[in-house]
Image (cartoon, rainbow, N blue to C red; front, side, top):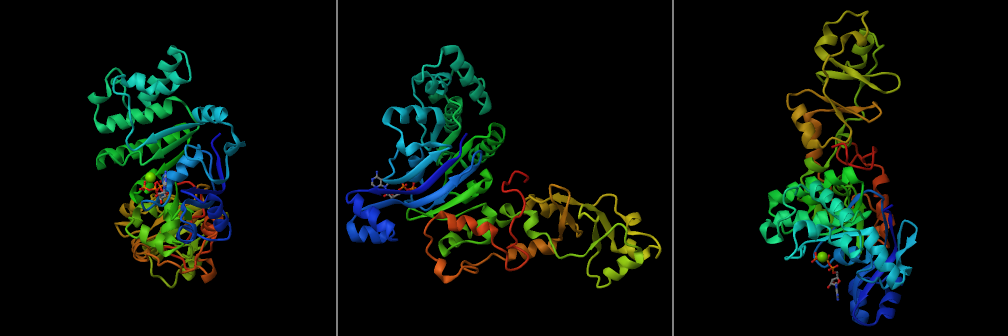
Length: 435
Ligand SMILES: Nc1ncnc2c1ncn2[C@@H]1O[C@H](COP(=O)(O)OP(=O)(O)OP(=O)(O)O)[C@@H](O)[C@H]1O
Ligand SMILES: [Mg+2]
């Protein structure tokens, strides 16, 4: 449970709904609609899927429509047109009573200023949602205690909200959403009021919880570093439209528009890029059955202090140092010359984590989950990748500057890279879980 599908969702505020919807269907956008009929376009023809079990981060400048979109998902805000499905349930067709029940069962919500009830204990606050649903005392106390433990508040359950710090109160808010055991969590700037250090902790914890509980989480944030820390796909919004969807490293490598490029230009590339994006896929790779003579021939151009070795199925076997190859007997094979301790990282390792391993000058091998060698990384590869911050529009045709919907942009991850180096797409798992 937990897949959310948005189909051509628009939200109009103010008057002239019908006219505004008609204008949108004819390709007009926020500014044009406002000029033509005075209506405020909150959301403009939005279509995409939230995958079951992912953390999806809605980002964009203030007023871009993040909160409106989040609240449309459980109809706290009523979409003007369009369909919203949760798994096979068409949320937009539910009657009032069904909607309330469905919302309670399926969605947990956490906001920036999470209002705990001041005259109730933490335990009672966390169990509040279950109380409304008439869950028996014993059962709801158990569920609440479990959630309290999950967020690290055990021992504080009988305190009152004013006895807790802001960060702890926010944890209690998260526990309240978790206690109801809903499949989907909607979180709007949930950590924005917290101190930077506590905020980091909460981000790491949410990511950990997500791994354990496998909930679908939609998280609104202004903060790109937060999006990177949470480690999910990013949806970039502007003027009520979705401009781009993708993993942070994809968005950074290939921003769909100038707006996106400017949004991500201060991102710490080393924290978002993955080893597989930087690995040198064109590097010479030796085979364990190569003779020394063959290996010397193949590496005659030199330029490296060693070479990686993979078997005939492409699986990584080890590394041969140039010096060792130079001093070996001609009749030996490469398999007898392997280093005992070659540096290896998995494809999804963050670049900042790779940095430490290449610092001593050698190359590390980047290896896919199935053991296949992707290629080596040297410190030079990393410097090159970090220096190659891309410019917008470099591989978009002029006819594509105005996205009609999200689908077109979700496809960017499948584009071929124009060069090897920083723009190499991630071909591995769509998640960032490896890092
Ligand atoms: N209840 C409302 N009535 C009228 N206009 C609204 C209403 N709610 C939102 N809007 C408009 O819809 C647009 C999107 O607002 P929304 O609150 O979704 O933005 P946001 O991206 O969440 O911004 P922020 O980062 O400041 O929270 C804005 O133009 C806003 O003025
Ligand atoms: Mg908002």
